View (cartoon, rainbow over the protein chains, first blue to last red):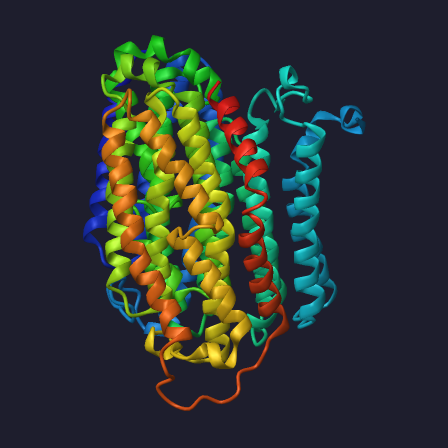
Length: 101
Length: 509
């Protein structure tokens, strides 16, 4: 491999941290979904790079599954965001506080 | 036996029955959209769940999954080891199918006014499929896919009362934390794959020694996997969705999530950690004994759950925190694995999850009944219910005392065995002594808030006048069956204990 595997791991960790930062700081539910998507894609980068590194296809195939599942998750998420907006007139995740922590 | 002649893939029959029932419900819905024929829909769901239960019990009796050395038909491995059907699979599938049947029957009354009936029941069946698949998953690929298959319908189920702010808020919180933890879980899988080059659990274990150079990656990966399991089992540090989701969700769904979903979360945790990360081999690579993490998590989870439950005024929230506390008890099963007799501790934890499945489902279904009556949500609102509904309240007494661990109920025996096995394991792992002490202290504390609820319904006087209470047949039937199962678990405890111990021994062996 021309690019050492460490660079891929660094890239994916950077993506993962960006996603995590987004989740911890954003209050908009849609941005939250996008941040989760970045984290999933960080894992996909890892899986594909390691599949190349180890010379087996398991990781690549699993990355395809992961993408499909992430899409399904977003579909459910958007549905929930939609009913959230209908009930609370907002997509801010800190607004719904009918139950105390 | 006839089972021998069946093709291998039929070993997954319980999960296939679940998915076939879900598809049958879709067909009913497509023939008659917006059907409100609750008897047909709830009946199909319950029959499907009971059929899955029947197949599972048949497999158990016929010896599917029992090692050939013990006179069984052998552990069935499917699709190159991606799925495995052994005793642990069948044991947890039993829990899932019984809980699913109870929830379906209870939903007949609870969801009577709901517009989208068939969607509700097919989502339950799809989630149950995911849980049955989790019990059989034997590769991180199938573990993740089954986990998502169980989670995605659950998000929708929690938020299904879409005009109810509580339900939507609960669904949102459940979804957000679920999405976060599944992303962390997936990243953990990718790191484990990076370190070992495999995703199938046995292959991971075989390649652990080759992962020496990546000890750090592997350790981080395992830590992230623990995060994913903690979410599914509602344990610290991903427990905080549980009180919100259980409180806001329709009560039968709370019962479903806190019993079946939790048991399914534990089965994948048990399987991944016993099969893929044997204690000694993993310790040699990552330098830390991962059971230490579970010792800490078990103690923190049970203490947090029980102390938080003791301060609640809302009954459903109390049950939610108690469910976190019980997750802490079950985590002991993983905490004890490094000690001699670790498989006995894990078997005891499986027993506890089994008994817990009935008593906790029953307790949440009583809350469902109270919500159906519309008596309110706090302990005071429940005051004096026994005068109007003695049967349901007697069942509630059984659930509460069993959850608290009062002899001679099932909950006592599972906790007692868990305690003695933990003490037994303390000989080689001193930390287990602390765990055992925490178990006793927390059980004693839990008696306070469980008996508070029993006192409210049986002893206190009602605050105000109540109208006569209806007797919804589905909810009553589900509660009575759950109570009977909790009581019957007592004479049946020998076989249950044997099944759990054997399953644990095989899984570890």
